[in-house]
Image (cartoon, rainbow, N blue to C red; front, side):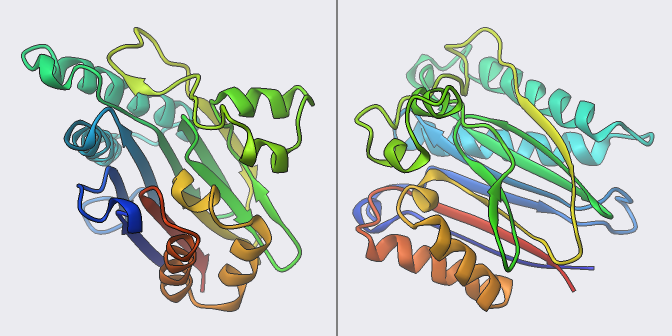
Length: 246
């Protein structure tokens, strides 16, 4: 059984504007036998457009995940429902050019017993955390993310790079096609899963995230991490979901 904590906040500097982040949690019940799914989406393209885009992405993933009938390959399922969310965004702007530039990142995981399935587009992140380590298990679709993968800069240097906010892929009608990153890995009983938008990982150091997650219950840790990001100036929307076996 999972203990889940979640929090989303507009951020100190954007408190007077709509929160463009959206989060979603799907848990098994009598109508949905499938394992838990967690989602974080970070909208862009103006406050109203960004908020709408991330909401569309989360609602589409939740709906399509619940609709899946047969025992699926969860990697293929994640890919398919992310692609469906991309089509939803494109269809939504056909008769509404005012939101033509709206878009969103997404990171989602399915936790099936001791296996973690991950999918993402953009730079929202998924981590596996335990007492010894914090490990990112998805792929930043960003200018600096590519530089890190090529060994041109370190992850620490990426946090200060002037082009750190430039995405190379997002769920937007401006992009005809997307290619989600999909990954599958083992999940140990001692591991905790964390999803977040860049409003958290861009402001709070990885070691601080790990120590907070491992030191407190998931909901307390989620609230604390949002507070930590806001104390570090909170320039962006902040979202986090934490899941731990109990």
